[in-house]
Amino acid sequence: MVFWEAYVSDEAMGTFAPIVVYWLYAGFYQLLPPLDKYRLHTRKEEEEKNLVPLPKVVKGVLLQQLVQAIVAHGLFWLTSTSDASGITIQPSIPIQIVQIIIAMFVMDTWQYFVHRYMHQNKFLYRHIHSQHHRLVVPYAIGALYNHPLEGLLLDTVGGAISFLVSGMTARTGVIFFCFAVVKTVDDHCGLWLPGNIFHFFFQNNTAYHDIHHQLQGTKYNYSQPFFSIWDKLLGTHMPYDLKASRRWFRGKAVERLIQIGCLLLSFQVIT
Image 1: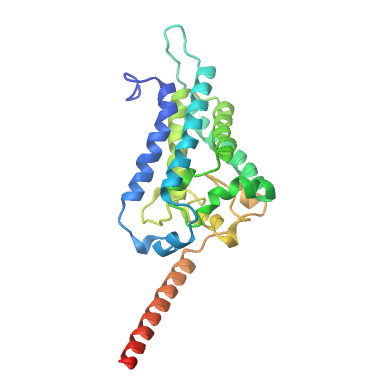
Image 2: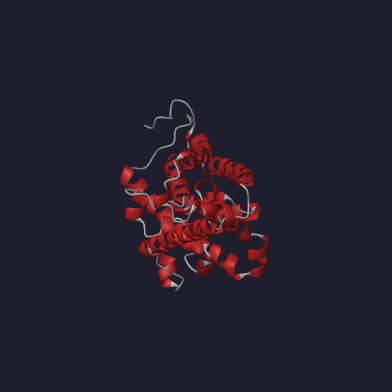
């Protein structure tokens, strides 16, 4: 028994719930105060380095979600196992947990190799994957800002394969896809907040994926959205160093204070 059972079908929830969850969770991050001391990059960096405005990012995400909804609806319709009364027999909770874990590994495997190939193939990177990397300083709403073809191949097809291989029902799919969406948004939020459960349980997290968006890390940390296994096995793993990042931010802050001090001193000398 789930809370939506009396209102909408599992198939409808699986189609639309991940979209709603995406905007709720990303919107939560967007509405937070600046929280400068928890940011992996300064707000000035976000303004200067990112090559695409927020309205265009929102449009790109909505386009990808439209394609995802169409594919999800078709996938659930084709794989429906409901009987004549419209009831689908649900597996036990332990089996659903195993199915979700299998789906996580399948999705990671698909996304690692497709993602890595999009970096290695210069044509695909230049014309398709580079769109996602226009957000050099990631933020939550831009988590699914991709070229439409990449969104289809990497996320939509990857999700469909994970669903099919794991053998989960549409109801289990609701849980899995919503969880995957929340994890993806969190990985792009740009904040290292204390108590974030994803940072505790996953080495592949906000700081880990942020490295991949930087110039020195574009050939590393391809794994997404759950684990870092393939990066470690295939030599593309680059660990993150939060202390180094914070030292760098402090250094930039000191540098800025020195510049301001020099300007004030120059002004006093002139006057």
